[in-house]
Image (cartoon, rainbow, N blue to C red):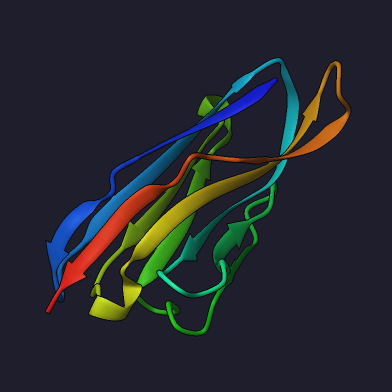
Length: 120
């Protein structure tokens, strides 16, 4: 069983910053890709950013230049530094990790989500 626990969401004014964290726990052999997704009310879940085990990154066009994804492999943790926040960034942010486990093989795990609200 793999658990992803997110933290760092909250309410911020436009132009402000937040840093999200997501820690994976369980019997983990290896974590491959990690990433952040978001879902705004009435919209589909969308990719925000991903980071491979080797550190290569991918960003949605809407967040390029404002958000930075990073990871600490020793801590099984992924971060999302969000600067220059806009009201349209308001959403529930979900952490995702592709995890190789002892018992279940490779699993696609999701966190419970953390709310980010940006006021104008």
